[in-house]
Length: 261
Image (cartoon, rainbow, N blue to C red; front, side):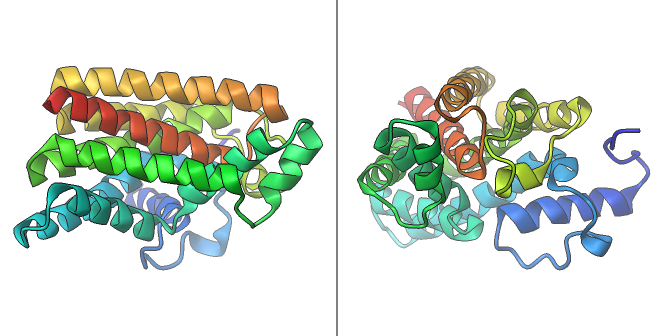
């Protein structure tokens, strides 16, 4: 029988799987991920959007503190983005850089995968990171008061992570080893539970109209990115998942900024 989400009354298993997701997606000291380390990451992927709430809130706190110290909006926004990167260990940014280097720096599939596995960052990776950080910071600076910024960050991090299990369902691993393949393939129930948690989080955090547009924009960009990955390398890797998260997160913040202005 395939693994399913925990029973509603199995609080210990919910907590174990949440800790596993948080241990993978952040650098927060939440202790051992699961008894014996036997739970695959895909099984715990329903909790990805909940981890996103934590990352977004910490970034929002950083922005609020910076604003309280009369730091201008753009530097405060850069601080908020920096905190979210620090909390997540730069996991998704690293994936974005490696994916940009691989997809734009080689012509054939094998060479793309080899470049993506290389820990060094090339020109395309650097440019992708500058664009990602710059767009997110500029969007946050345009949103306005700290409460709005925190809400936008919560929505962005929840949606960016919450749609990833659907990508794991839709694509095949591009190679037999690596982080992406090791994560496993979540059951449809788990993948849709993750998305089902992310959507109301975004709708509550943002105005309903802004939240609806943001989730559609994030879903579209991530779906298009998944299609590009299928054509480029035949599926996903851990780096591709990181790049897709960055695309979804950025789109949510851009929509929130457009709505605010």
